[in-house]
Structures are given as structure tokens and as C-alpha cells.
Amino acid sequence: MDQITNRAIIPPIDLKDGGLTVEGVSKSYEAKGDTTEVLRDISFSVGEGEILGIVGRSGCGKSTLLKLIAGLDRDFVGRITLDGEEVIGPGVERGVVFQEPRLFPWLTVEQNVAISIHETRMPSGEKQELVASNLALVGLAGFETKFPHQISGGMAQRAALARALTSRPSLLLLDEPFAALDALTKMQLQDEVIRIWQSRKMSIVLITHDIDEAIHLCDRVIVMSPRPGEIKSVSSVEIARPRPRIGAAADAIRSRLMSDLGLF
Ligand SMILES: Nc1ncnc2c1ncn2[C@@H]1O[C@H](COP(=O)(O)OP(=O)(O)O)[C@@H](O)[C@H]1O
Ligand SMILES: [Mg+2]
Image (cartoon, rainbow, N blue to C red):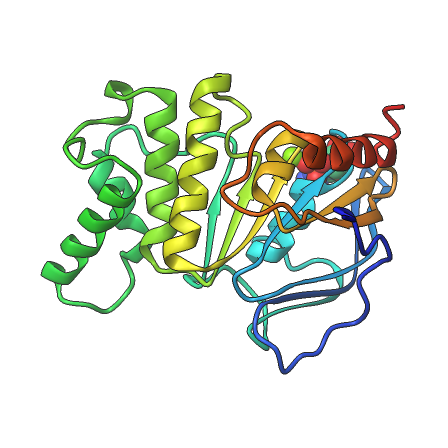
């Protein structure tokens, strides 16, 4: 059985479909008269309910790309659309989780989570219910009134995930969300993401430098090469869920990804 298919660059996208499309995206930073080309001609799509991984060495432009998709930086060439709508700024239909939880230290866990629907028009009772249900979803029921310094790093990252989920995004953007956690907590949270994804079926873009994380979570994995960041390959991970973390299928795709990353 061929576990790895579709190494070609993904063809142009049908804009009638839902999901994310990134077309011909290039990005340069200008500083002190110098131009650094960070991303060159990046094109891919993420289907509705698909988990797409992006792996690449540090500095190859992964976070830059994620910021463009999040709408946090509009200074780029190309076009990004979500469910047919061009991305022109941040929006509640895109939830973002970064490597650090980025919680406000002076707010409680539930207040931090409620921020994501602060501007959403909804009766306050409904907002409270939404926050409570999303905290329960990530396993933080009972910790609503704790402050960030009173909870562990893993719990803080769960709170960040709840904040990203509370606006019911159709796309979840994860930028190395578990990189700062210990190995066991990381594996636990990876499985939580799968469980949540199975109940919500949103699309996910997961940026990671952890190959095993990409193999465990993603339907397809893009490998980026650096300077400038370009798509080197796209691989499908056709391992049925719940996925075993070890085994021949995972080994085969790991070898492929490591080779594409230039690791051997
Ligand atoms: N705001 C910025 N101004 C100038 N250069 C930047 C800026 N942000 C990132 N870079 C540069 O762009 C490149 C890609 O960075 P980044 O997207 O953070 O990579 P990655 O997330 O893959 O580690 C790096 O060389 C980095 O130094
Ligand atoms: Mg980064």
C-alpha cells in the first residue's frame, strides 16, 4: 500500500469550494534599504475539514505565511481566500494559536477566552455559555477563575486553544503550538486537537518543526525550503485514525519528510 502520494505542487484551486486558498503568495521584508525575500510563489489549498501541516527549518518563513493567512499582515503579493472571501484582515472565522499562550496575566482564564467574542453581538448569557463549553472542550472546566500564573504551561496552551475555538472558526491556525511543552504534555494536547477536530470538523493549518507531530495530525504535509521560503514537496499521510505513533507507515513518511528537509 502506498502511504505517500501527491508529491507534486498542488494545482490551482477551485474558488467555488470552501476552505482556504493561497495563490502565488510572495513576501519580502524591507529593512534599512535591504530587501529580504522571505516567501516566493506559495500556492496551496486546504479543503474544508482538512488538516494541513507545514514543516520547514527555522527561518524559512512559516510564521510569516501564517500571519498572512491570519490577516495580521497585508503587505504581500498574491491572493488568500477563505470560503471564497478574500482575507483582508483578522476575522473571527480564523482562530490562531501561537507557540506562547499570549494570555493577559491580569485576566482570569475565562476572561482571556471571552476576549475572542468580545465584539460579537450576542446576549451576555450566551457568551458565558459559549466560553464555558469551550473551556470544557479543552479540559479546563473548574479552572475558569484561575489566573495565568496559577496554571501550568500545558493548561495555558489549552486556554489559548479555547480562546481560538470560542468564535467557532472555520479555520484554526496553529503556529508551533506545542513546541514549548514537555513531550508527554505535547502528545496529550495533540490527541486533544484531533478529538476537537473530530467534533468540530474545522480546517486546520498546523505549522510545526516536529515531523512526528505532522505525521500524527495531518492529512497532508507541505515541506518548505528556506531562503526564500518555497514549497519543496507535498505528501499525503494516509494512515487511518486513531493513528499509531509508531509503525511502518509512519516510518515511511518520516523518511520521506526528512529527506525533503535535507536531513539525510
Ligand atoms: N518583521 C520582520 N522584519 C524583518 N524580517 C523578518 C520579520 N519577521 C521575520 N523576518 C525574517 O523572515 C524570515 C522568516 O521568519 P519566520 O517567518 O519567523 O520563519 P519561521 O517561522 O519559519 O522560523 C527570517 O529570516 C526572519 O528573520
Ligand atoms: Mg515561526
